[in-house]
Length: 316
Image (cartoon, rainbow, N blue to C red; front, top):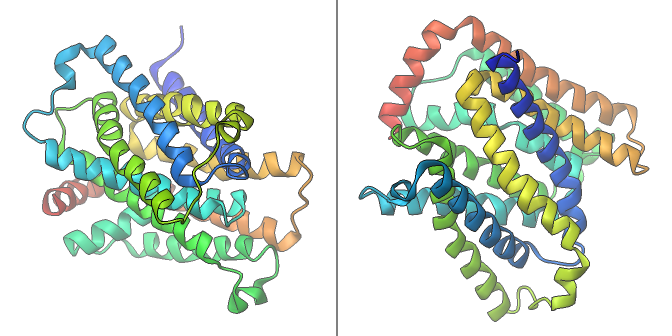
């Protein structure tokens, strides 16, 4: 008989692998479609599927907003419109392996955002891990040439991906305000409420000439990629992530987030990319810092529970 922790670990593994592949697949789709129209179609389908699953699993009553529509709308806009438009626009101008490492910084970025909101400083080990992890990301972004960091290697695409990561961190922290919502319910409702902002972004981008209106052929040319990032990346991976968090807890699930950059690197290497020694070292430094931060947090677990409760209460 399979134990619940094993199921949770399997769910987290599925998510890490799916999201790791998403950066490469998404980068491929962006060769024919811009981030605005790509995500408008992607989340129209994903939101419909998530709402249908929610209604089937928890009943139609779960579709109610319980008088908190405005807050759910703001979190959906930040978490889905903010994250996807920033991250995918950035991905169009950044390498997938760099973007994957930036997104993997999420747990450490969460500590910083909570610090700004609650004025409670994270442990020194957490801050040190963040600095080390950022140094590793910088080495990867520079493609193994650290001196180029000072001459523009860190481009605006990477900064947009970082902005997307911060948007999702804010969204994740906001989830603590809805303890009565299941993870599936919170995800489905906020995804659906976030979609209009994505659609509006696509309309504005076309109207202002920022992005041309894509042809039907552009969508059909990348339908396999679109199917992957929609059904696997935005639906299955989100459901398995929520399942992992509910079974093994967010801290244990976050450890599997290191599979995201590892998977992305593995895919680009199989596709022919040959990273330099310094670039590989940078990836190992970042992943090592993330693992170390997670392990050190486990040792502080009793204290962390109290601190986190205070932080979330004050941040809400």
